[in-house]
Length: 324
Image 1 (spheres, rainbow, N blue to C red):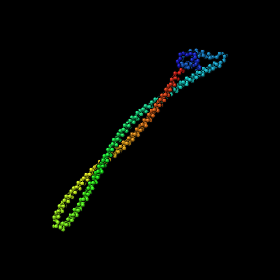
Image 2 (cartoon, helix red, strand yellow):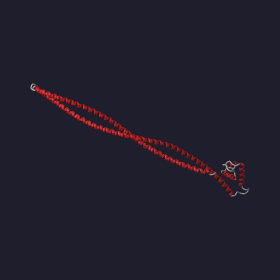
Image 3 (cartoon, one colour):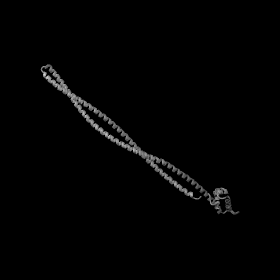
Image 4 (cartoon, rainbow, N blue to C red):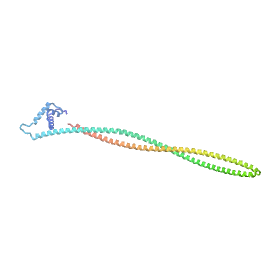
């Protein structure tokens, strides 16, 4: 370390330090100990003076104070050397610790950035899930309205179908009554013709006029029979039309029932999707809370690391400022 000049005191201090290490206090060793400063001639001159002062008088024994002074000087030099070595080791350890703290801070920052990106991605996914859930809820509402309309249409069709069935039943009863009347009339006419034929065979001449009257009556009855046959055909035609209309309504009801079933299946599928979206929404919310917890823990760790680095910097600054 450069100084304002080499003095006798500095040379003596360097000599004591070298002696304390058990080395020879030569001029070169002293100059190295002084930080490679000072001329060798100056160091040699001071060294001669110090050795002369420390040399005991001829025939005079060294006093206890002189021995103690030399021992204290040696111990002081050794303590200074150990202190410098301890300070150097502490500085090296502090430097390594500071590098470790800085690396930990960089690692924490490197972990925080992906976590922030992950949180942003989770927030985007959560927003998408909420929009999908809203869309599904709207679709479910529309599906419920459509189902309500279809149920109303089905109820109306069932009412009309019951009315048609009642009409068809009434027509069938009328047709049965007409057929029974026709059969009865035919049977009566047959019996009457047989009776008339038998009477005609025995009383042809006697009942000629009555035959004409009976023929006229038969014509009237045939007209009635023809009218009844026409009414019967008309009733049969109406019954066939009613059956065809009933069949068409039944097919329409089947189609609407099938459409209602398809809508019900779509509603069930939409409900399943809604449940899945709600579960996914819950998972995303849990992941978001976990990410936020991790961010808070990382932030706490980063603050602690910054506090340790700050304390380490404060410890290093006074030691760096202390004179050697």
